[in-house]
Amino acid sequence: MSDTTTAVQNDSWPKMILTGAQMLFVAFGALVLVPLLTGLDPSVALFTAGAGTLVFHAVTRQSVPVFLASSFAFIAPIQGSIASFGVSATLGGLMAAGLVYVVISQVVRFKGTAWLHRLLPPVVVGPVIMVIGLALAPVAVSMATGENSDNIDYGSAIFLSMTSLLITLVLAVFGRGLLRLVPIMGGIISGYVLALIMGLVDFSPVTSSSWLSLPGFTAPSFHWAAILFMIPVAIAPAVEHIGDMVAIGSVTRKNYLEKPGLHRTLLGDGLATTLAALFGGPPNTTYSEVTGAVTLTRAFNPMYMIIAAIIAILLAFIGKLGALLQTIPGPVMGGIMTLLFGSIAVVGMNTLVRAGQSLTAPRNLVVVSLILVFGIGGMQFGGGQFTLQGVSLAAIVGIVLNLALPRAQEDE
Image (cartoon, rainbow, N blue to C red):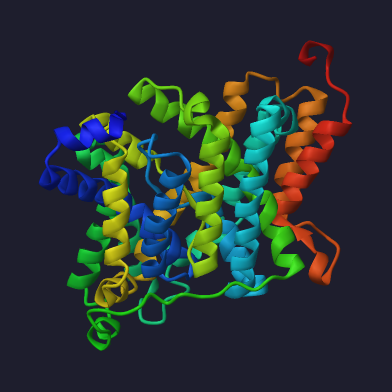
């Protein structure tokens, strides 16, 4: 008898539904933040998070207690791609990025993971993650200062954004128990309540929407420029996926890299991302917030995540919920973004630090410097449908330099 079956028999259904709902609550703030920041539909993101989680658990045979939802690593690339190519073409690029996961999973299945670490060492992955976080930092600042808000003046925007940011910081640093797992949601709710008091929330989208409605599904289209722009972005989250599996395995004391196997978890993640883009949602990834909740509650049964996924799908069809999420003022989200983009950059910095390699060594200095300057500075090669710029250019430059430059003797 499987562990999942035994757990289902030991838990009552009311307890399982309540625990599953709690897991979704922990993920909810980050889940809807990505579509709100990128201009995608939050109701679609709820649907694709639930559907993607179900796909993941089907591929991994309900063996890993994780919930998949909107990936932060893709926020800046999605914003840049939508500005350059439009929503539909961006979704086509995201589908291609999901297929990169699928390809990597099959290579891992037959070749193991050693090639992945050779191709993408920390000296490449670290600065690429930093570029993902910093490339569109000005967008966060413009939202925080109210540049994109017609009905909010500069002073009100700064007050809203910095209050939301402060509450998020306090919860992240000083919060205890469940509160520490939901700092983003706490910051958004606090900023939203403050905006209500200041009379800056427009409820007309909520009153005009129906209670039950189909999410705003959007079909992808395929353009080479958008695909080339987005494919390299999948590299960093694919490498990060290994860390996520190790992290949840350390909590449950199981080796998920062996069973169900890294190739299965990567395949599940890739198919979930491809499915999400097919319907118009952001790419999916395993959520560290939910891993934290699993650690806190000792809820190791993957069935909890399946229940959370089903609840997410049901919530996606409540039209007024999606409309309510879109009434959150821009400066509130901008305050959160200033922390979010910076924290992504810090993850990349930490990747470099943990590698323990000297960044002033000539080889490493060249690789890291060119990735950062090309990725953040706006360098681009080509034109039209075959333009390489931003994260995609930074990743390719890093990979090529890492393979071409001779290694120092101590690195061999």
